[in-house]
Image (cartoon, rainbow, N blue to C red; front, side):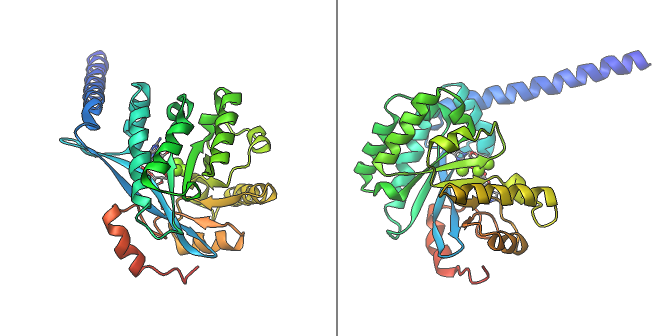
Length: 277
Ligand code: C2E
Ligand code: MG
Ligand code: MG
Ligand code: MG
């Protein structure tokens, strides 16, 4: 009986694996037409400067699949990267987010995430300049978010690209800091505007002394290098207050505002006040 059980389990396991693989394969194939079929849309999440209130929004990509519903970026962006689709998709996000931002009050910035593939494409900086020009957005109203993974590859080219963007006048944020292969050498070599502390460290920052030490360290490191700090994933008033006491500059998270459609931004701005900070 044990033997049968074992085989049965193995068969079940294989079958569910098969179903999973087939679904991924289906998703992957439909990803190829998602751009043409206009299935992508962007949500915007408020970025709040503790001293000044809302300073802008981060653009977060969504895919409304005709049958599967809204697929999270953590699932489809790696597929798009593996299939070489992230160049085109990234260009779409950049153009649409910049066009949207050009309709906002002129002191608001838009922050756009870049995937490694996009950043490494030749002519990326020309494309950024072209889009800004086309939609009429000042360069310093665009913040580009890159992760440590981007900086792992082809270091000299990466630094060249970063410096070209700096000359162009865009802001650069280092996203998800501390979650990957953190190397302090690129902090020595490049002046980021902002370091974003991953939500992983913010989660339990009120109660976990280890998280507190790490967050305090990142804030001190950033300020020592003349950079600002954004805390991601701020969900409670207690977290916001703790971060304020430790002189974190900016907050982002559901406590300040969840990602919302472009159309919802007007109402959000009318209703929001951040006096609690
Ligand atoms: P990210 O850039 O670190 O974005 C922050 C993520 O935290 C978003 O997840 C956001 O919805 C989520 N978040 C916001 N507030 C809270 C909170 O209070 N609590 C928690 N637990 N989570 C919160 P999302 O939208 O699922 O995006 C996941 C990742 O996908 C992003 O992480 C980013 O790396 C990537 N991504 C999203 N849009 C794009 C894009 O247009 N291009 C590229 N290359 N990557 C993108
Ligand atoms: Mg980001
Ligand atoms: Mg992040
Ligand atoms: Mg993240």
